[in-house]
Image 1 (spheres, each protein chain N blue to C red):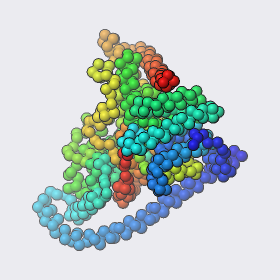
Image 2 (cartoon, rainbow over the protein chains, first blue to last red):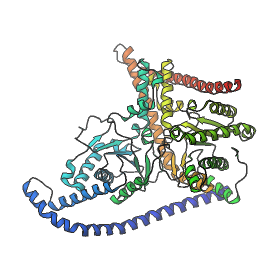
Image 3 (tube, each protein chain N blue to C red):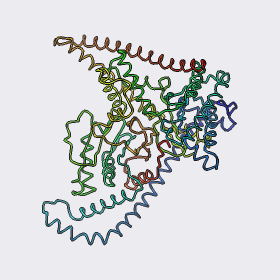
Image 4 (cartoon, rainbow over the protein chains, first blue to last red):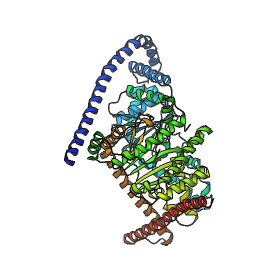
Length: 291
Length: 335
């Protein structure tokens, strides 16, 4: 009997896998079809704009001869940029801080860099990238380079001028000179999770050891302030999880108290529309805060 | 309604349960039982009626869990944030809790027969005194039972729980039981309200919300999370099966991530011990170079001492917690 049940269980699992594969396949097909439609519609809409904008761009490029961008791509990236910003504005609400949780083997740097750039382009101020093996943390500079490259590709040279700040409180803290203004990209690894809570706890216990405060004074807000350091970044309102594993895999346990989790099947070859879909879903989430 | 539901599964349910049991099963499942009020609104009932039905569903779910060999269940009954609700609703919920814990005490024989141990996780000091006493009685009556465990999170939030653990460790430091450098992930876990339980394997939230709402943030960092759109009072055996199937699909990869994390954690502890020893040797070694063998011996000695210190502290903390309940209980007898 046990053998029969075992076989049935395996069959059930196979069925679920087949079902999943079918759904993903259909989604990809559907998206491809919709994507093409979307492109054509955009082309039709942007044609007059492109024609009108072209001479302008030429004038500009005459004015700054050192500008390397060729006018065509510059124009395209500008229109893209304004479209993305527009999408961001049209959403019901936009997270201030988004977490990108990669729960897949062999993460793709290009795709993640794309995602980061899109997030910033729609107007999100803080983007955290996390994977549970610490791959991104180890190859911090590679990810950073990729992000800068994608930013130039997607937003054009002007777009990349409003550059971002890369934070990582890991081992290589001092290697990256912090680059100007917002938005901020943060590369996270499991060490930033429970271990950072332990460090904050140690700090508090040390101050108790030195008789600077009593154990009774320790409060939630005290711990929270320590855990927000050094930049006082708000908690992520949204985490988009990529991959088939349904778990946070150690993503910042303290900070995800009210975070909404949205799953996407994979970060590889993800399109802008998929990300926008996730953001739209986030827009419909309502929080009651205990009430 | 009673805490314990008798009765077998029907044939179809039994077959499905057996099929599921052929795969890896979660040992500990946590529930966020969301959607009672929305259910009441949908059915045009009183809000309180929705909460009552929610409790009945919990009793039914416990029965299913028993048949599925799930020994431990943790539920989010009342959050500290819920004190912000209208006075009327908070009073209603407290009254419901009072009734249910009284009922639990009446059913103590049945609980003993099934070996159900009830634990209440949270800061009981925030509750009315009579409810505190009732809860203490229930916890003490069932604490020696060991077949299945029900943890009820009441006046609970995870951040509060973590902060409380830090406070306990700071108390240990104040008392000279441990050093600040002894604070570690493992010790913090021991100081949480949930220190007697393994981490949940599966967390289920109903009613379609996709967040944790300050529930078991520390404990579920490597659990399978399943968000289901059904409202809690409408939860069915099949919903539970679906969640378990989801867990089984994720089992391998989560296990792998857990193992990886455990390795990492052990390494971190070794590193911390090493740096403590190095500091110690520097202070007391008069600047003489220390050979590798002596260093190794010092490390082993330090680790053993630390473990002993921590063990003693954890024992004392457990004792402190136990006496909180016994004190409440004896107070209740006296009055």
